[in-house]
Length: 356
Ligand SMILES: C[S@@+](CC[C@H](N)C(=O)[O-])C[C@H]1O[C@@H](n2cnc3c(N)ncnc32)[C@H](O)[C@@H]1O
Image 1 (cartoon, helix red, strand yellow):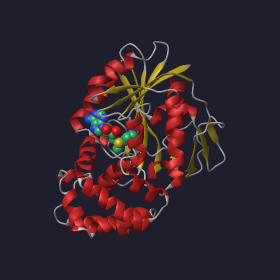
Image 2 (spheres, protein in one colour; image 1 turned 120 degrees about the vertical axis):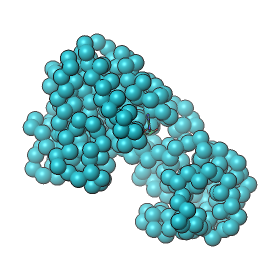
Image 3 (tube, rainbow, N blue to C red; image 1 turned 30 degrees about the vertical axis):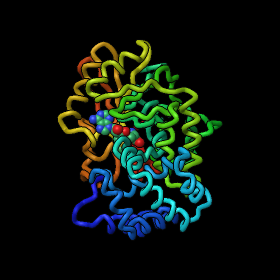
């Protein structure tokens, strides 16, 4: 996120500390405010390009150095949850290792890879398989980041209405609150026979640097989120997906070809398409249609209202903050697209709309 010129860098860091971090991270509150008060630290941050100066980027880069063992005093302060020591060590690390901090910030995108998407993906994928009578599916996640969506069949999901899906013994358990009376379809997903992730810059969780970066994007004093991510990393690393680097519009035919002929390719996208220009989104739709010339192809989308082309918006206002769960079935030049649900807060709340 670029740091706008209307607010000074010091104001941006103070606001981040006192407003955004204060809610859930006393450590980052203290560190961000300390950075905002240090002219030297702010000058060091200005060595990064403007779009890489945001506190979420610089703090993740510093955290990455701490986790890698290159900033031991900062690591110790974070481990001890000692705000004063962390503030001092963060400034010291930033001044001593400005080039390293900037290099990490430039190389990496911050990842929020929040999990919990499976509560929406699972029933929609199972529904796609039901519609064409598929007994196996191949998952292709577009804008996959670390590919955590590709484990959708290997997690346990519980819903607030007492329903559950997936593997109840999985080390990764997710939950969602159901809004409204309509139940979630209870059907189990067929076997997953291929897992393919596509991203401009995918994170490979079997690579120590990539996995560390995902950890670094979490705030150091949020043990529950850290524990959840560790479980997700372990689960993903036990059956790593095939990662394809590139523009999904270009890579999609290759990705679909990786799915065995007797399985239904199910393309998923979660909060990814808003990053694509509209013209790319339309070409993506066209590519899905082309891929379905000889076999059915499904697309399950969790995208903001009006972001996923062809998926109905149900009359909801664009940019209203919630997400439409889309299901599009392509086969032999026919497209059937519908909105099967809505979710809020990245899936903490979910309303299922389709008949099951
Ligand atoms: C907001 S993140 C969503 C990540 C993940 N799907 C999730 O739900 O947590 C957007 C992802 O899309 C990727 N991305 C952005 N533009 C892209 C493009 N043109 N082609 C492929 N991936 C892209 C980014 O690298 C990033 O991983």
